Image (cartoon, rainbow, N blue to C red; front, side, top):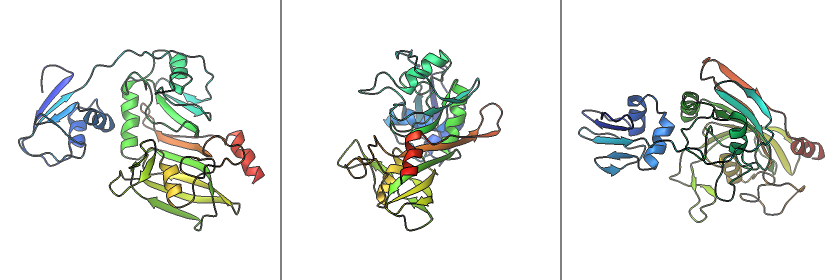
Length: 303
């Protein structure tokens, strides 16, 4: 290892483990998910060449790792009211409203959850995910409501991120889908990756990333079904893609379902209802539950 604390070099003598697993053990202050991000950003080289997170190490390989310095935040703090479910020195759990984007991106530089968090938490947000996503360890879509946890320091961020990486976090969603689902419960195990023809969409593709969704029926309405989904993995748009894949797209989802709007819905009928994980400081399991948003509960009464 070099003397520069932001640069590392390893020479492999005998090892056949994945490079992301190896580095997360050798650099203890970096989570496996963060190592994977470094790899995808070409900050990890094997024998002076870029690599992939699943690369199997071989004797004689030389690994060079560069951990970029954190960039000062450029996002403006905005006094946006937050529905705070829980908060302490390590984490803050928010019940996100419909229509709120989680972090700034093209076309959404303000009004995001991050803008609100910077105002509320001041400088107490983790910096691992860079200047555009301080504190953000996982995301939910703009029109998905419900629970999301943000981290106030890097140690908490790494601890939560490691749980996400091994799929040990409890994430249960409620949704209303088109059609009458045949079975009372089931498992969708279908890999997801970028749609081959539309880069804005995800799709079930043969060589995609492993994606598993468990679902069970809560109530049937004939033309629609009220379900609970539990994520075993956490791919982008996973529930939306998986339910469309089995021919039961989410009500209101005009990306993966019918284009026609029903019941004046803006976006998919999906709520992140339950969130549970091991607390980074107490090391005890904590779980939070949120009420269905008004639009959702009103729709259930209507149906």
